[in-house]
Length: 250
Image: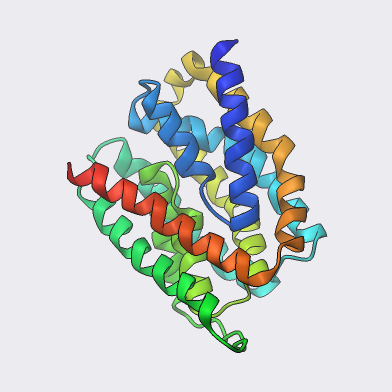
């Protein structure tokens, strides 16, 4: 019960951040599980099983709030799923300490670019989405499996830095994450599925907290003023990834 309650609160807080700013559910949840002594691969597996339900609730909520782009959704879908499956297999057989600092450094730069947009005097027209979104989704899915979270930080931060609509990007990336998470969880189940039964209280806590928070976060994303939303996304990316980079290098 203690583990369930701790992860329930963590799941609620993580989904409020994720649903509002487009990232951090996986990073926050998997970090907590690893701090509780759960191995990295299993922490990522538990997080993604919970995320099947939280991303479904979040995606539906964002579609209803019209924070959604159909064209972006379909471009993210297949490469994101393929990257997630590949990352799951790599994580169960290879140490992630090499790639993690590289991803963190990249995201710090993206966070700075996003935060700098707060000081722009005029709104920029969203750029058309090019073919670069396909490798971006592939890398996002791969890093998501590998680090227990990374889909939102990699994909959302890069698209927002490229002047895509902030609210549509956050909502669409959240909606696509359901399918990416489903693919990742299936891959984890094939490799280490038998070990999941020992961690059900943690999974259920993350799941319940995230599902409760998902519709509230989607409404908050719709209502927040644009520049504070951009600033929050940028600062969150910089803070989380600076911490991850320091931890990886020490």
